[in-house]
Image (cartoon, rainbow over all chains, first blue to last red; front, side, top):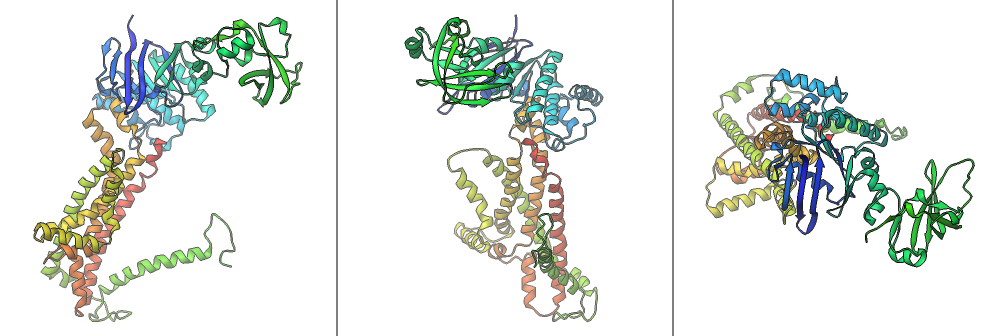
Length: 335
Length: 273
């Protein structure tokens, strides 16, 4: 089967800084694939290598079995939605969207019908003559999407496209992006530092850290079976129990991570595999639950207490509580 | 009393009065110059003028020395503006994003001619021409003017580049445009109004420049220098006023036009945020 994209042993450094270190990646055709990591982890550099804006120092970039490592961006069948949208300020919406058609010298009437079609898909009919400065953030985002999709690229690269939008709009656009991807059946490669965004939209996620990929997996596995302490810590809230503490206090031979929703407070310890005493450092109200931040020796643990009429919160900061969990809920860490 | 009304959205009476007086102070002399271009009294400024005539205009039209000065000034302004546009735009393109050792110093050196007193620029250019052995000519005036004209273009273009999204060029390439198409469809239209506005300011600056010209002109007479020498003679004073009216027109039109074309683009660049 032909992969949409292969990256083989990609290395890239800027002076002394290693931006990408031995990146290997296969992305299937039609996949919604996210590159997730903190800022400076190399995910945007990786996207630029795929788009052709940066050349890797070593390694190969293959798009649909064609080596494009040194092919300039305008010869790749890949389009990019930039973080700041990069709409041409001197052109109106229609001119922005039809830019690539003008470059390809497609006849005017054909351009017009394609622009109409794509603008109706992103729900921007009637805005053809507006300048980018006369649009809201969400509308600019749609223009940028339409401009990139009008080409029907095989792969669409998105560089934190929702970063500048407020929360409500972001959630709505997440939904619309996912729909667009299903409708066009093209590969989306999506860069984000927002784990919730990546988990909710992606088919698979690559977690970047310091220029390396820590784990490539489905959102489900990334959350439930993190391979490294970094992934466990970066995705969601988690408590990390290092190996020496586990050996000493829990008689367990591995370091592991445990999600807060799997930790029980003051329950019958006979029902659980592990149990430990901890004191409460802070209690944070989060809406549908309280976050209980606990500490034992120098280990921080986070547990949750869901709001429930039958089960009122009867603990306070400074209390000593019993935290218990089962072996099936923990994830052993490699290091 | 003057600042009693403390409404933040409305200017106080005192502020309004001050603003009006300020504007009058700046512009009444211009109207006086236009008025005295039509006076019948040719030796002193008498108010109100004893009579009105158009004869000074016909005298100006027939004076060859004025036409020589006008044509020299236009020639200098046009050539130095063109040089400024090319050099200023290239300098802006090279310096706005690049980071290399000494970049800030080079930026400072480019802007310096407009900050330096004209008299310093003039003297240093004059001695430089002397050392190298370049004879004074129209070209030495043009070189002198280009030093500060370039700064105006540079500043305009750099400001535009800074406000533009650095991704615009990448976006254009991403959508299939090669280097030439990107330059003509994206870069030039984006910089166009900034270059034009800078060029027009540069033209206006060059056209009425006196100090640097004095040091770099040799025997040649540009229009402003002709006017200075004419003021010393007490006869036919209104002639200088007639010429001044021409200069006001020639410099006003490009400045108004420059502010008009850049007015519509100032908020457009915000799209990168």
